[in-house]
Image (cartoon, rainbow, N blue to C red; front, side):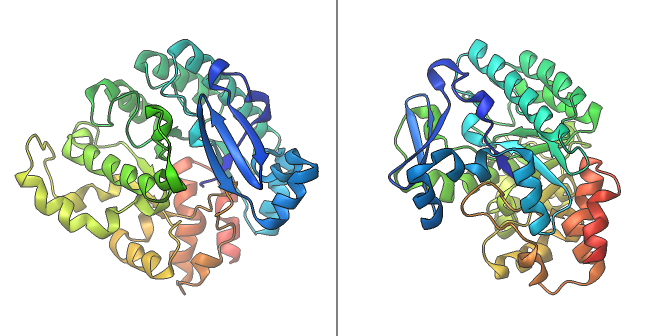
Length: 345
């Protein structure tokens, strides 16, 4: 349920912010405004890029036929598609961001319409302005969006416990649409360099953990007990620090949560994409199979595109089926197709 795409029809459509994607010195470069993020390509892709840069980006920016073929090769029935978090544009002027995000959501919807039984999308919103975001929420959900893709914090200088976001949460509960929290490299918003891409390596995990804690400590889930939140990359540090989060809550100023930390876990769904089988086993023990979902990070060079990293856990059939299909089917309202591969595995 966690995959990315770059939509060529949106390149260069955000004025001075680009965005632009190209290959340089064996690396994929993503330019947003004055900032660049770089990812090393594997040797085969880097060599290919020397003569055909666009082909080297086919996984990231190819058409739906490319994606469907790779899904078939990896025994994936249905995939949720979202844009690169570099393209959230929370740091852009509202008029630029709102128009770009509308174009981006239209392109996502059109992409998934090529095979609606296999693909669905998670729209983004111009969250620097909540009335504009709520308007785009309604429009994008009408186009078929099944979850709202947003960062875990640092959204135009605000965090997820800020009451300015409450109209968004009201709308998510009204439509029964989950929030899909995926961080972005925060250096894009503060115009600073990001050596080693550490915002991706550890910054994402910190942002995901912060999102979880703020939603609890800020009383968001007491105000919106039906709100559903998905968190990528195993929920950051959450499964491993639940005790600390709960233990320190009574001593922290301004904490508004009314229950124990574990009592809120039913509102959250955590992705299984952690890169160590020991961590996955621990996450399963702490979170439980009912609130985990399979994600591959397809479209990134460090993805885990097959369910092999689930199978290696040695799960019983019922538990495996929940994680690789059943939970997502229920959460995103996908229908029977989502669980067909799970039931055949």
